[in-house]
Length: 586
Ligand code: ARG
Image (cartoon, rainbow, N blue to C red; front, side):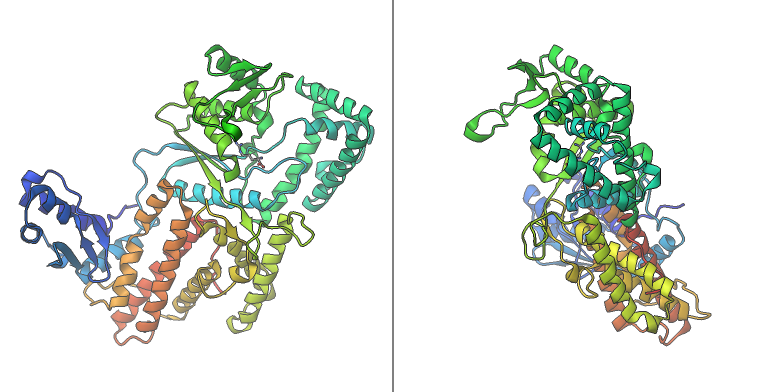
């Protein structure tokens, strides 16, 4: 494992050295390097510096250029415009750097020197309820964030804070006591049966609850029994949880996503901590009693009529709710899991809740300056018509139906080309699944998370445009070229001159590691998606302009195969971080 400094960082370093050699009075200056169309890079930092030193920027730029150590890396540095530097690298430096990347399993991407522990709260459906498209976003985004963070060497711990506690369980359990056998044992059902059983019990119990006052009273007492840990009640509660998990797992499997049982730690898991959480908040004065309830007030947070909105830690009847479980979870995650970052991938509509929870935890000293907490609030999933995603009848769309439909459409797309590629029926089915699920994930990930996004299956499985299918086809096309290469092996030839399309592709390949670091630090999977899309586009241009197997010299063929191979590996790695498969033949 050898980490490879990017060309951008090498150039940056040389410029910084030249700046301090030529202008020692300036102190350290950021050369402000960026990729450029005119040359390989452009440095804009001298302009601001000249202002500071009251000098002529073009003169300063020339001084810096004279002090630059060009070595084998810089081919040409030209002062342009009011005082920019246009920098062109040698072809040799590009190919050699890429060769060093190709020699490394991690494509030369370094591991963090001081990794932290990030707890990612994501994929948190609710027990006895159907998962909806919002839960899909949380699962897909959270999984991608973990993939990216893990790749940098950060340690991530998942927490699926499922909704497995609350007053509705009184009703459900009481119903089951009075109608035993309505839920088949969890180990006898598949995901679909589990959900349909749960739905049936939910609807039936709701109907009795709404129409029968005496049942309502029994259900209320059942909540008390549950909270006080009554054994029979807990056993029945567990049955609801187990049955729901069968269903959750079937959906996660469909999503091609690994979820570990020990990371399913729902609201109920913090039950034992909640009384203490409340006591500590009350004793420290962070929370106060108001009309019997224990609440936290915030000056800066106000609701309708400018009334302060409190966070309710404990209700007047003594019950604990959502806030108490989240506050207790913070104590657990920081105190016991030693998290240095907390991230919550939860619908943006809960952002006020998290704002209040984080602020309370800070006041209580559970969240110190050294721990960051961030609610990555995602927007609403809209239908192709731009309205919140509903069926024509106005019901929320079942997540599974949606996934099934995506796979169905993708399979049709795959099938169309299957004969030409020579795919077996088995491969068509498998690829259809990877393409369909990939399409759903990518559409979600390529939009910045806080924006609403349109769930438009036609667009998602399109072969053109910014879709996962386009990326998957680019990958498969490269693999097919590599298979057809016969005896020619991908081999770097640093002595060869590079065509413009090769340089552009090469420089982009070289930027992969830095991009992953940036995207994970900003919790921005859409940046990785955009990088990959651009990679595929640059590859397409390269492929159009530079014959690979039909190149003139044998070295040229090898060097282009080498670029193909590194592109494929980078695409594969990047897609894998996002949780998307790249079939070898498509
Ligand atoms: N179960 C909740 C819902 O479906 C999401 C839980 C989010 N996580 C948390 N720590 N509150 O809306």
